[in-house]
Length: 187
Ligand SMILES: [Zn+2]
Image (cartoon, rainbow, N blue to C red; front, side, top):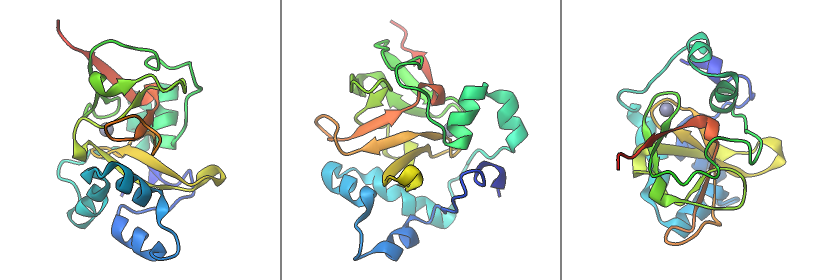
């Protein structure tokens, strides 16, 4: 088990999204439930799909490997659930066409044509490249109820998703530039 990447935040979330939700059923709908209602996107339910069998080809590395592969900021954001300062990242203002990949494992996450200017200072998208590209889970750190977004292949923390995005999904995937690597489209 990749304990090294989990113990810092003191959170013991599992990927068993079903039991997580069942534990709160009735009393609190949870942010993910609200987002599912707004966007109707099926990736919300990837939490329970992947929890039973585990995702084939999941990338698991120990802490030292991630540290040597990533810059300090990339490591802090993706493996320690950090957040880069707004308006400082490489991609918040980028309009370059291409595909944004996970900086840790290379999985394709977002397309530039779903990127929009959210005014937040972080690269923002209204949907992932495909339903299974990201996973979400409840994040109650910092006294807030948010929905964390992670790479489905390597569990890298990417950012959070909020239900105040533009049409057609109404979702705002608020990402960290440090978690992404843009592969520009060949013109
Ligand atoms: Zn990844």
